[in-house]
Image (cartoon, rainbow, N blue to C red; front, side, top):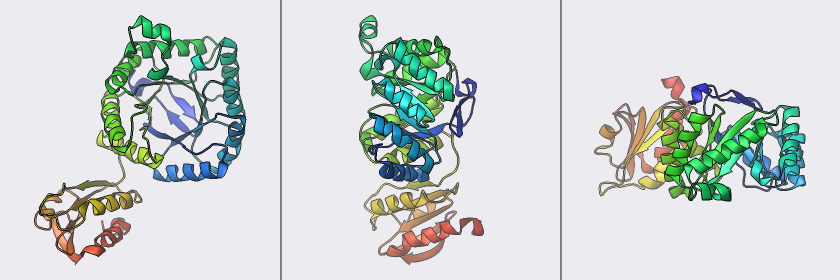
Length: 353
């Protein structure tokens, strides 16, 4: 099913599926038992644009911490469970808005039934997660290796297990670090189910490799109208995951709002520290809820022309720079004042528009 036709599922105060906006998810890297650190990181992620947060629950103490964490945050919290069904039940009892499990990893039918019963009682969704790294041996043998078809069969087996227990409040997640396998698996799965899909490229890597793999994989999947929530999995600060996810959605035309920053590549004409300046502008721009394009150019000769399609831009020269609006030079300022002049313009953008 395309995302317009997937089932509508509530996760705390958020709703996914049925054509609702694709929501951005991330995961804390703090110890969940440390309530203060976890809450602080969730607040930072929420400010950056995170809409659903996932926390690992490896211990009973972590499950109990969810109750206090929930009191201090405003976005839905998903409890991430591996192996021990008791952690899932405890997380649900302490207020998790959704749980993520692989039913094949938490024991037999009775243990899965205990988790389903707890979720059913509180009407919270279960995310059925399957990862290529833990595909069942019999499916690896059946398909002569780890394949997209095997991933889909594994996921649907788990879904059917929960359906047989009388519960259909489900989200499905199938992930692989093999980008094209992951894309193909989503294409197959979308034809076989109408449950909402959480999409991501698992273990995608560091900021550079992870962003490239995630952009390609998520772009190919989302552009086929598949996917209801996303996570860009990166080895680094989770804030970077949110920035990347927002940019992927905006680039695909799936989300509007937020400043788009464009900058030229450096060349021999560049007379300022353009790389540092462009990064500073991008960080600053994320603070403003404006739907505009900002250009950062390194050459005062061609800068105005190159920035013509941007709403506002700055271009560097030798020790000085230009402020440009709609391709027209409006002000010349010392280089060290460029960033602050741009900030002032953005702060008063709606007054001057």
